[in-house]
Length: 59
Image 1 (cartoon, one colour):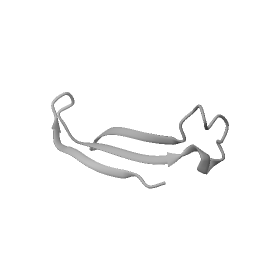
Image 2 (cartoon, rainbow, N blue to C red; image 1 turned 90 degrees about the vertical axis):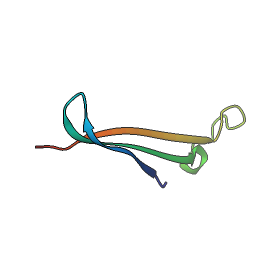
Image 3 (spheres, rainbow, N blue to C red; image 1 turned 45 degrees about the horizontal axis):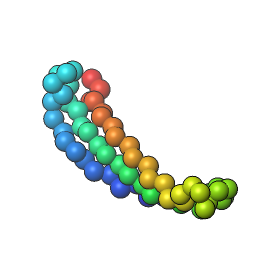
Image 4 (cartoon, helix red, strand yellow; image 1 turned 135 degrees about the vertical axis):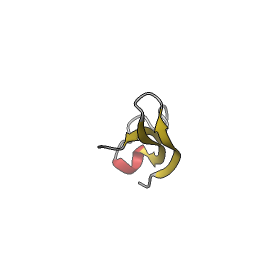
């Protein structure tokens, strides 16, 4: 599985007044690639994983 990562913004977080960076990441996979084949006709095989993260610089 490969994550596609995007830097959304980097700068001063107004809430904490610390330097911060925001990221988004997405990945796609098939359940069947991991042996999850039950009910494939009723449940989709494609799964999208979305991650949103905010990181603050430590002092």
